[in-house]
Structure formats: structure tokens, C-alpha cells
Length: 109
Image (tube, rainbow, N blue to C red; front, side, top):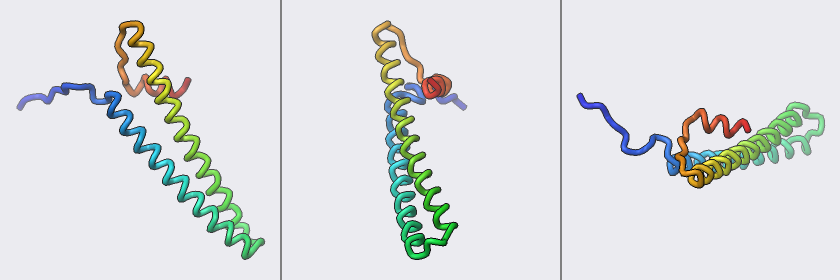
């Protein structure tokens, strides 16, 4: 049985961009759903101002909507740092390896 040899890196820039696009799309969907649920609970609170559970859920939905937006922004930040690192590597005639450890280091900067 022959070993499969990759002809291109498993995590090349095109693949990373496709994954990022998918994640940003999912963040947008999550945000839309969270805001729709916020409106739903807001209507429930308007009908019954004493409904503490709906008030708490309304706040939780806003937190979820905000965290989904923050996650999309973090991803874009990582992608821009990756592009910057790629450009710096090109200017110094080096190559850039996009490993998970390097992506994690970029995310934590």
C-alpha cells in the first residue's frame, strides 16, 4: 500500500480563506438569530414587565450577538496579521508556514 503524499500544503492560504469565509458567515447567522430572539423576549417583557426570566434571556441574547460579532472581528484580525506576515516573509525572501501554532501565536498578539 502506497503512502499518500500531499502535493500542496494542507493549510494553504486558499484553504484558510475558505474556512474564514465560512466562519464569518456562521457568525453572521448566529448574530441574526440572537437578535431575533432578543426581539422575541423583548416583546414578552413588554407584555409582562414582571417576567424576570424573559429579561435575563433578552440580555443573554444581546451578549451572544455581541460575542458573535467579536469573534468575526478576531478572525479578520488574525487574517490581516497572517497577510502581513506573508508580505514580510516575501520581502525578506523567506517562506511563511501556516501551522496551527503560528496561527495561535498571531491570535494571541
